[in-house]
Length: 446
Image 1 (cartoon, rainbow, N blue to C red):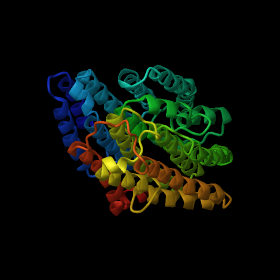
Image 2: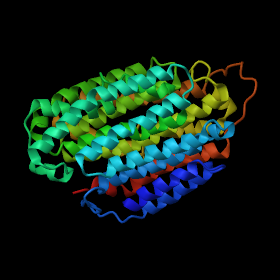
Image 3: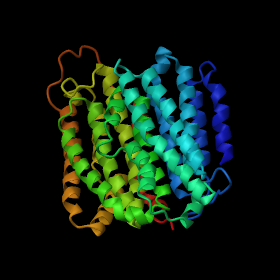
Image 4: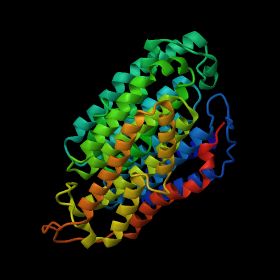
């Protein structure tokens, strides 16, 4: 695991050399394929050491982090063309990747906290430095204060656990079973805000709308998954009290997911709609983890990876339209089928994956989550039906609104998609639909 960390650290000087934009991307591709060739021993902490370790859960999310980072560089060609602080952008991106890599691979709880919060800084710099509108400062503040407000209790909770156990290794926590309300809320709230759960989700649409395309991709692709990963790791020693209190977060998540699905129909901003759809998907992931059964955990994990690829691809599509029309409004982005018929296919493919059509990973995740929620309580079926129906609804609404209708007559110059964009969308869609073939890597852990 250390060799990949070293490779990323030595990529940093490359960022400041001239004309190294695509070279950094190629080296990340190389790193991706090296990492893919690691032999993963399913069910074991196969690379266990004092600091860095990697099991199946970490492996999939690290793979996703590297992949999304490669696609972020590909999506940000505009910065390269305009030479808009492109060296610092690359440096920021590599730094963020290192933080994410370490978050997913450390076993020490304090180190996990450190890198978990450390990934906030480069994200904030992405939003404030490369965002499009002046409101990005406000969005950055929302992101910062929401996250910081709940991160101190998490730190206190970690110190309490250390005081009690004299160890911070997540691996040893299974010998501890705490039945303390305060500790539970301290530990869990930080991850629920990061996910984000309904009621603490307000930072997400703001941050997404103001972020540049790369910021949106990393936020949707990886940042929301940090919360789920943290919950999965810490549920080991909070099992008993979670079984007593989980219905609160499950009920809020399911009802919130339904509300958010309805709210998606009220959006006029494409990016805002995609951001709200992320909240709806994450609400199911939270429910799956909180139920504490095997199918729920696996469904959440698959849903996180599927949503990371799908949501990131949709933000790419929104950015492709934005680069042409300089507007994200649904009223102006109409009739795109007349201008870019080939891009219309990609809109359809990613939208269908978003509403969990086969053969996407989202479908596999949703099947597992629906099974696990139904085994917990059959009444949850009502909300699940509504969420599933409306998620298909807003995906079709967005697709038909953007692709059909009369196009805006103010578009006087236009160019269709370039091969880089089609490749980028292909690299989102193919893994999302091909990984179903080897779903046993995600479905059989223990």
